[in-house]
Amino acid sequence: MPLAASSFQLPPLAAYIHIPWCVRKCPYCDFNSHAAGPELPEEAYVDALLADLDADLRHVHGRELTSIFFGGGTPSLFSANALGRLLDGVERRVPFARDIEITLEANPGTFEQAKFSAYRQLGINRLSIGVQSFQEAKLKALGRIHDGGEAIRAADMARKAGFDNFNLDLMHGLPEQSIEDALDDLRIAIEQAPTHLSWYQLTMEPNTVFWTQPPELPEDDILWDIQEAGQALLAEHGYAQYEVSAYAREGRRARHNLNYWTFGDFLGIGAGAHAKLSDPAGHIVRTWKTRLPKDYLDRSKPFQAGERVLDAGELPFEFLMNVLRLTDGVQAELFTTRTGLPLSGLAEARREAEARGLLDADPARLVATREGQLFLNDLLQHFLP
Image: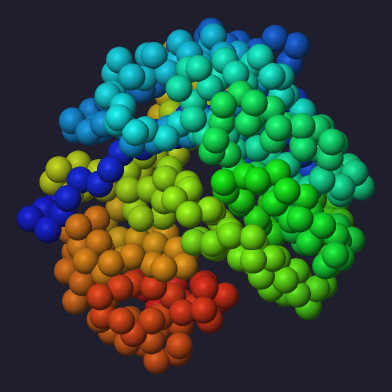
């Protein structure tokens, strides 16, 4: 049955495009990424991406794309010609918003000035550069293909190519990392003047080398001190935290990621890509695509590997799992416009979470307290179906 469609509003629509190849698989990485061979099948993969999008056009419902995010893998392995043909094909199928944000993930080890200038000319207007650390020993432990100098040069090349909006991805809690090591990484990152920093803790994920051969990581009290000192340093330099691991200059929050965190819709095309899509009647579905590149490129096989329609009982948790990551939360009324459900359905769970000091008591907002941010899983337990 449809949800309460009279309350539901179709959310903004974004697109995630997955490029699954990288130079070398990192030991901590659990993403759908695969070591590239000597020849990348660029043309065949772009053809497959556009055919995949054709199959998903039924989910657009007249909307324009507010953002596009090229993730991976290492999307910067693809040539500007291939990405240009892809962007042209996407825009012919789904109109772009006038101020669309188009982000490309890039590895510092793949930076070439001419290549990135060409990316900028295509209309790609934001980069997310995977630095992780600037320290040689830490980069080696993480299996990265670049060194600290290349990471600094990558930021410089980004600016010279015309990117006035770029993110640096940085990890903390690295093997044998001290508080001063972590702060040194942050200081060097800040010196590169990015508009956005993603600063997150290394975790051991299943199906990775680190899961089966875990390195020695800092103890919990050191991790806590790193987190507090790093947040203070970022705030001192004008990077405001707006999500669990995201910090931005004024006006430079990642719009694509904000769409995720506010329960917006996104198409997911490419090997292993996931999507969250709504229809005007209020049905919400999550889909996922064929994971292995060789299967995705096999035109005798379907692109979509599966889908799951969310029922009304799941929606409160699904919605809050995203929006409560935001440090300032959202207007409470967004719950109804994005799910079609009455806000009153959250009343009991909200009271319990407020009583434990995990959720702010402002009736007009859904926002975690400082303690709720620190113990987000405990907060979300109150909203499980």
